[in-house]
Image (cartoon, rainbow, N blue to C red):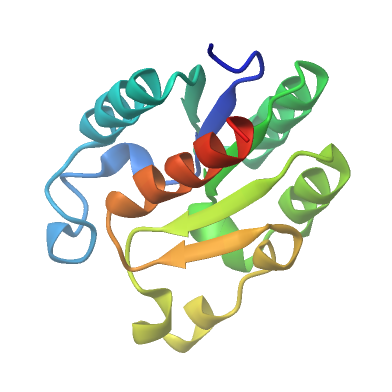
Length: 149
């Protein structure tokens, strides 16, 4: 029996350019490739998912508010550059009462100093960094295990 509440996959700025943007850091897979695999993994786990990407902070916040109103069971978020700058995104996550897992494709702690600080991580259940797209799928399996308990 599939859980009745979906899981969201939310990707922030520049992640729509995956596969083209710095493939030595982010890999060759496109966001469409990742979302297709994510949907297939979710289907195999009996989970309904919704995927969304935007370069605009307000659109990400609007999506969090919609998913809150739609009673999503969890959200996997890669805030991109907003990780380090957006108090507004942090507030939206915090006030949503949805469990969030923050995912970063690269290991942000091996990169520039400014990437070491996340404003959003403190209001997320967990953070996964440096596993590439596998981080998204690991977060999905975590939520699936929680939903099927």
